[in-house]
Amino acid sequence: MPEFSINDVGVKVGLEIHQQLATNKKLFCNCTPIETEEYSIKFQRKLRAAKSELGEYDPAALFEKSKSKSIMYFANPESSCLVEQDEEPPHELDVDAKRISLIIASALKSKIFSEVYPMRKTVVDGSNTTGFQRTMLISQGGYFEVEGKEIGIQSICLEEDAAKILGDEGSVRKFGLERLGVPLVEIATEPFEVNPQHVKKIALSLGRILRSTKKVKRGLGSIRQDVNVSIKDGGVVIEVKGVQQLEQLEKVVEYEAKRQHGLLKISKKLQEIEWSPKDNENGSVTTEQFKKCKSKIIQNAIKKNQEIVTIVFKNMGGMFGYSPYEGIRLGKEVAELVRFFGLGGVFHSDEMPNYGIEERDIENLKEFLKITDNDAFLILAVPFEMMDIIVDQIILRIDHIKNNGIPIDTRLATQDGETKFLRPRPGAARMYPETDIPPIIISKNELEQAQENIPKLWDESIKEIQSKYEINLQLAEQIFDSKYIELFENIIKKINVNPTFVASILCSTITNLERSGLNSTLLKNTEIRKTFEFLEKEKIAKESIEIIFENIMAGKSSTVEEAMKMASIETVNDIDLEKIIQDIVDKNEQLVKNQKERSIGPLMGIVMKELRGKASGEIVNKLLLKNIQKKL
Image (tube, rainbow, N blue to C red; front, side):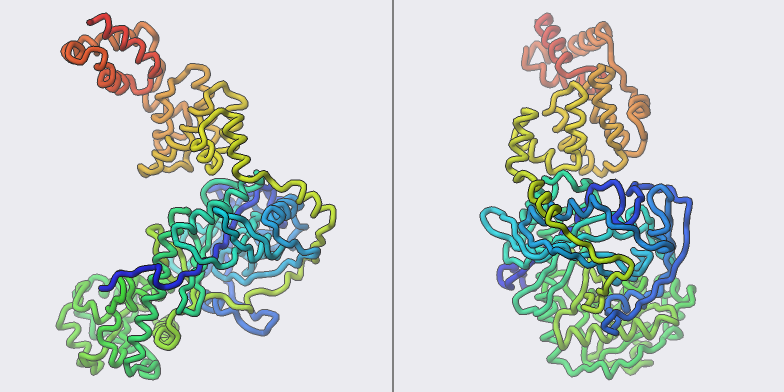
């Protein structure tokens, strides 16, 4: 199998950054955007695709509608109202959101329009109760610099965030409305040619410009990166949504470039085969042929009254398993499409016999459908009412790959840096004017105020943090880029603790606990602040903080007090501490005689393990040294 080299395919990348704004209310109502898991209201909707002002249906909307999902919405009156429920017209545009978006556009040297027209963007996946997202183009053009190179800005939009998905349950998809309507800016860059490792730097630089305004939200979900990827010979741009972490960007770009180039190779090979979609007008129902099959997957599907459908592809033997690069196969493309409709997956002939399907099952199938060794086939379990839609979509997709190469998709980034099919790419029919909101005028005074409030450059902000809190450059960068910058400044302002120590806890200790699989969202800012208050009042030692945070992030406790009780954290008085250390030195007398004062290192570890954060490391060090010298 040939190795893939991204440098040989001519990759172009464009970024779309979606950043929530730090406002006190939503974009078109007075609700406060509070994250919650408590819902006292629920209602159900069924969304459908509608024609745009062009008289056309958007392909992405039609495709999403084919899933026939019902949508269940959950709401809390504290964070959503009748506007989010689509039972009341939108209110006036939030002035703070407007002001912040103008500052961001000015900071990026983008040309702001004097009149802004709210639009409706068709969305029928359930994430908007209305079936559309409200958005408005604020400005076009502009640029920012990364390592001396200008990165162009295509457009800046102010829009509503979508509802928070809570999960799927059969044919019902669930959403929470607390996030719906939260104002955010969408910044789209011009496409640029760089190595994948530079994409992260560009996204980071743009994120830092936004954070420099001190008017944007921080934390998981408050900023999202979508990335548009195309290759020189591909002819299409693929949008990859949902890149939550910057570390994913490089992997996503590399994988998507490899996938696109691999599809071109698959397309070329398909063109050498005499196959036409006319040979596959419908799949064949083969449930009877599989009733005695030992495959648990097949038998479970039959018990659910699903049909076992086989689609035959003449002269395509070997094509579903053909892999131009590792992990890139036509079979995988089809499986992603099938999963979009809520099915578990698909079996293809190039992996048979397998999954409990035996050789005799295959032979019976070949005999029933007159399949030759040169043919390929797919086997899938489908609800009867969805059979024709799914079979048609599979055949259309393979025909598109044969004749056009790369399907024009919107895809979703996975945690391991790959991408998977989400829906077809939307077209021009997706947008139409918002009839409930008049055009928004941008005054000369508003433009002047935006210019006056352009934030300092990132470098200047870092230098200011370094100087103000007397911390090193690396720590200043880490705390600025983290979600804890406001909390850090608040702690230092009101609690007498060392800034370097606080920044280290927030940027290193919590991050290390996250890497070990613990959940930082369980650790609330109020509890972090309380921990440092306890430290100031000498209720705990520095060494206790990691133990407390670990306990809360593991879900064992919800407050500092509970964590202290569960971990038996309490400060040891001087007399007891002296006795504990003296006993440990006595027990390790031979070690002290052999290593003398160098024995303080291993003994320190023993004492701290024994105390579990009940005493300061500095005090323990002094007492150990005193007892070692006494023993010598």
